[in-house]
Length: 424
Image (cartoon, rainbow, N blue to C red):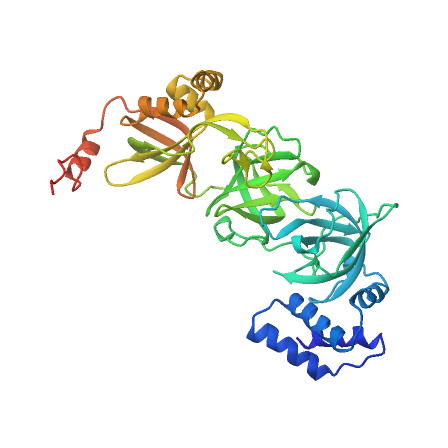
């Protein structure tokens, strides 16, 4: 807090105004300690208070503050520091937070750093591959890494001449991210290095995504996305890799890792064992949940659309897909199973094209879900696949032609199962 107060005082001293340090510290302490205001917001609030007290126009103040010399990324050394950077936008990431306008990586000839631009700034979007002069940005730090934030006092100017970018990634200690187990990746925006086996690659038709699928280690399984702009090599299913400097993302309560321009892929000469990589479950299909049947997916991120909208990209022209979100019941427990298009087609004998035609004839896509329920609910199946969160991602699902006697006895012995309901 003392460093932040001194930074504010120094900015006023450049205008010939000596604001008592104790007054600045007192106001910062009240905002940060008492009211739990973030440091950068407290700094802005206290600065604006003294601007008003000394009758200094904000525009004049921030314009003059933009004049100090530029900071190189490698010279960033302090959280709460204000800076001006000449940088190139080397990568933009997907963003799911309403309050954030853009997030990605900036680079200059000395290094690479993450940036966040808040919606409240009102600034136009930065474009990947373009170079900018960014004034009045604030340095933040998390998990041993610095980042920059554009706020309401920041400004941006597009540069005609491109900025050269150094290779590699910048950290305060010039080190790679800490090696972590997949089960320990539980914080959004966390940087990490993981070692795991590629257990599944998913079909991807979006040009901005190079590869997406599942990677697992001894502790669990997680989704990964390798963006085309990362310019990293492809990985092969069944091989083990070290993924250095990946970023943890969260969507809808599930964590995933994203490879970026500061990430590295190293193939390992070992076969990493994936903990609980395959789960098998047998039981009656007692329900097919909403969101099953003929659905539409976002053509960019492949998420299922809800009322014609993608949670990330808004209203889009969706692409048709078939899936089943099934609930199997063994008599003693239940298990959610995600069944993809190929398995759904084989299980029901209904192709995607036929499902689309069926829905068009009825003017209602719900007829496909009705058919799935009619064909599948009440029958017994064995599903096998990787366990992710509460779901088994089915690699196979086969009908049980004869009910296992032991399973039947378990179901019959379960209280309330296959018995007449009491009449009140």
